[in-house]
Image (tube, rainbow over the protein chains, first blue to last red):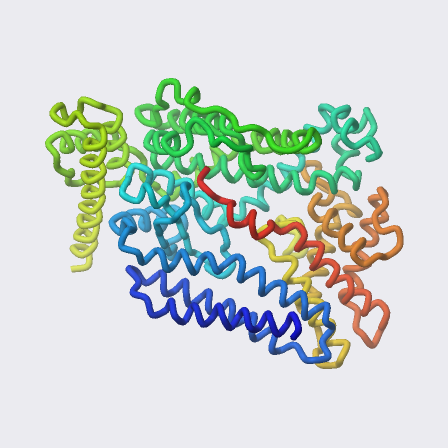
Length: 424
Length: 150
């Protein structure tokens, strides 16, 4: 047996599993379409391996086998995701409104798959290669019946925007210059960690830029800086789209911090919250009545410990500096982009009207956007005496969740009726 | 100005550009050409364009707001040279490194009947580059925990 034999056997096994999954009942057509695209990806690997003659350089054959194995590791979890998206525990009511939002801010042919996942954090699959124009968002299973966390999907949509707009390439140069500038401003710190890198006390950015030791050292740091910049950008998207509700749902999920070291691809908590506040403050300039930041919001959070030894902490700090210097630009980029796509923003009068209807226990007509519904929901959530007879916190939460879900359903019905009327 | 100069190219470490796959395809197509089964390699040509464009700032001057050559590109290229085990692969001489990169880019366009050794070098370089660029991909574990909303 050779690695090639094993590789082909693995691909056949995955394809058989896809064929079985294809027999499922899918709630929307996107799931089947995604399955077909994944099937084609694995078929292509098999076709490629079959095309390699027996005299082919084994190094080349092995590289193709490794590529196929990588795609198995990367995309088999997507198959599980697609299967779980069929489960009745999913909140199918929110698919329509979120899809419309995704189409509005990404492209009109955006496809959305939502699934309740056994992972206590909303997430998205970042890979665009086999599934272009797809957004796959996982929502935490214990919170499936809690629509108030939907604003976090705004952050996840941001990841797709980041990829589709090619922001990694766009900001790569700036991230690297920021890192070189940070090194230049404290050369002795670099020399302390890397005394043999031919870095002199008087070196400027131009000198560091052609120092191969420095360049090789900072290559992974640029990756961290760009990953952190992406998180900052996605938070800005969440704030713009969902306003104060994004801040509340973020705090619900993550405050004060997770008791483990920070991940190097993420900013630490306080810097992240500061960026969220800065974004809200910036957006408020053109919309003074919205984007209010709850008093003491930042004090709800604390930083997670930095991982690694002193050298890694130094490199991580360089990535922090580089990514934080991009924040102002990213906030403006978000505003420009979402403003041009006419993304919905909070309408305080409609939110207040929805709150009024919630007061008598019914969903509101003409809510216009889930942003209005979710912000109404969070306003009620924060008011323990909203329904005076309902004193039990859990009961109040349950009533509120049901009302919000019903209002999102009503919003979808209204939208479909409007569209149907437009087609008559 | 050619079409590629008007856009910013990703570094060879880019998570969006699939450089490892391009380099493997180039190696495979060059191998096919070596055995007389293919007339030309579009992947090798594309890789040569990327290398030339990526390193051209190092020899032709640059805008003051741009880095000379992206760090990710330097890192992958140096790793590829080290994978090849060729000479003292990476010194700290930027001009030498740039010249070396442009030499490999040129070799990627060589026809096997013109220069067998340069052609074989180009194929081996593609294999080495594929491995080096893959080394800068996220591990599958990291890829699975990335893009959480946390």
